Image 1 (cartoon, rainbow, N blue to C red):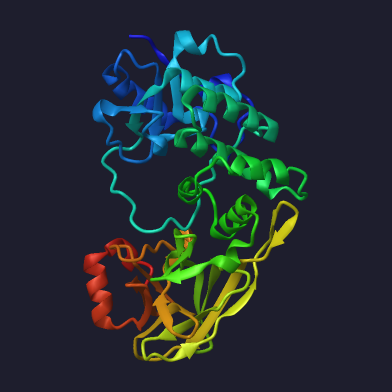
Image 2 (image 1 turned 90 degrees about the horizontal axis):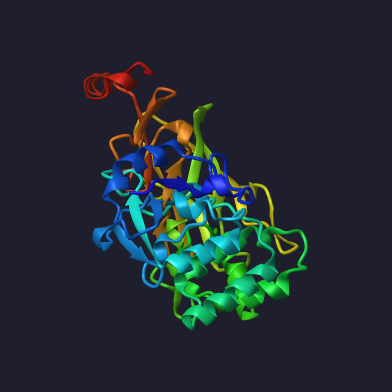
Length: 383
């Protein structure tokens, strides 16, 4: 059986987040285990974080668009074929998948529990820095080959071209609009790379109208032309700091409020249904084809501490009629994961606990200390 080699060795054009685009030790270790189990008629191999349900681990570009990737560190090719590659660019990667048609898919970390819920951190997939004209060229080639632009290649194109939308001018606006016309809406919504405010701008560019003005609210989701864009209650408030100051709890962090003009109101409620207003400040700016977006916010909420347990939940209300709890997440340094066995933190003499989208703060009592010591001894030292 021929040896597989990583495509990261054959390209310098790809630039992504730290650690991507270079040899990944996890992939190398996994390759040693799956190389001999890969169908000998298949030349291309892709490692994925998602569970693989393909028969015999074989996927096809005509059917399995969810396994499309542009990160060369996750793609392996038989050595005798890889050596014929000239320096690999994005067009070359598309042609490689098109020429092979089939490829092997192996889960990078099998056996890990699937993450539930809405991923509040979008994937940074990186890019080859492709010129817009190249996308037009490769789209034409692929349509001629298949009769259409397959969702597999649509997925690759939108991920690779995403950095072009964040330029400080709109010189490529017309070309990008033409390319978007070939990409299905469900592909745009499902990449896992596009934040909600940017998604609205991309759809507005594609359809030549302000999508936000055409949105319809249905059962907690915002829809455009019967397309579900995103659920409001799943765009989380991410808590980065919790502290007790002069008898008051102060909870702060960041949140993305995707709509510029809307009838949606955000606020907090405690466990006695008392309302607390949110203090919101601008938290950085991004540029979308020369237009500044201002929907990333820092939030702060304060409520009184006492000798009894208190709880706080983030809420939204639409047109004063429909309201729901909003998802809550925590910065990694806090070590809290809601609705898991690691959903608590001991701080300032209080037990902080997050479950059912409510953050509780209860004064630490002797009984609680003893229980925590025997249940979670490694954390009891923080008391």
